[in-house]
Image (cartoon, rainbow, N blue to C red; front, side, top):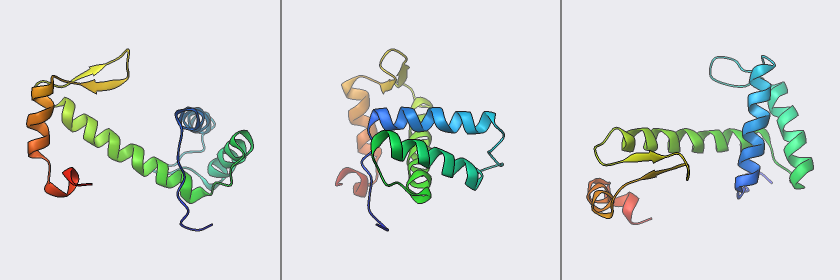
Length: 112
């Protein structure tokens, strides 16, 4: 259905990542986007493996989400007090650093 959201699991994200890396290695990525054939091949595997009915738009939406998360993490890591924990694959900081950072967020971000 158009507009139906998808709840992505870590397993689905990992699969999507592996499939898209394969498509890059096959030369199916343009400057900023993937070729339609890359999306179709990726959809076929994801839909089969996870018994889904994803669309190209679902994948593009997930990539936009990843991009937003990347920009946010990059911004946090540029600040003093934030570090990347390789073992946990996450940004870490002390409680006081987090509390100070949260105070800087726009009001809309803290009420959602």
